[in-house]
Length: 268
Ligand SMILES: [Zn+2]
Image (cartoon, rainbow, N blue to C red; front, side, top):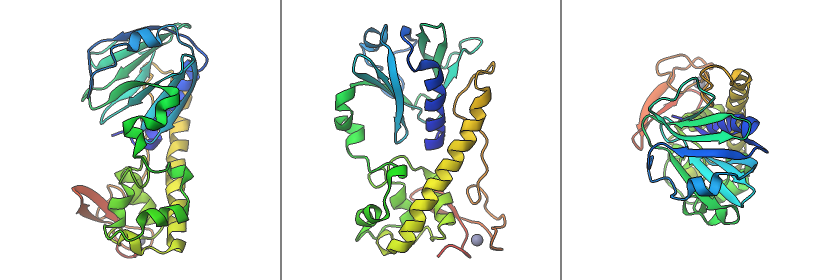
C-alpha cells in the first residue's frame, strides 16, 4: 500500500515530465475508481499547462494554469506509469503531454481517486478540511496540544489523520521505535521532551524513505516506468520475532485492527 514516501516519490517523478508542459490529451478509460472521475475532467485539463505539483497527506496535487488542481490518491494499489510499452486493463486514466509523454494511472484494486478542485479552494475541499498538520511541519508543542487529555494509545492517535496528516502504519511503528516510546502508552501522557524526540523520529524515518525513493527515480524511465514503489528496509515493521539492536526481540500486537511491531525492551 502506498504510504507518504511513495506518494512524495511519485509526485517528484511526475514533476519531471509534467511541470511546465501542456496536457495535450486526457482519456478516462472507465468512469470511476473509488468514486466517479469528474465529468468535466477532460474538458478542464486538456490544453492546460501544469504549473506545479505538490502533496498533501497521501494525496498528489497537479496544479494547472487554469487555477484547477487535479488531486489523486493511490488507494491500496495505485501507481503512475510513464511511457509504458503497452496499456494494461488497469490503466484507468491517461494523460499525454505536448511532448508526447504518456502517463497512465494504474490501479488494479480501484481504491484510488481522482478529483478536480479550484486551486484557491483546496483548503476547503472536504477531505483536506479536517486534516492535521503535515509530518514535516509538526511542532512538539502543537502535537502535545493535539494529544492533551487523550487516553487512547499513542500508536492509534498518530495514525489519526486529524492529528497528523499522512502517517501510515509502517512509519508510525518505525518512528515510535526510534523515539523509544511504547505503542500502548496513552497519548496524553507522553512528555513534551519525548514528543520532541518523536517529532524528530517521524521526520527522519519519512525523509530516509523519501531519499530511498528518490534514488529509485534515477531509472524511472525504464520500460516499466512505474513510479513510487521501491524497496525499503524497516527496523521493527514486519519483523516479529527478529532481534532488535538493543538485544530485545521485536513483538507484534494488534491495535485498532492493525498490526503494531515494537520492541518491549527499549520502548517504554
Ligand atoms: Zn529494542
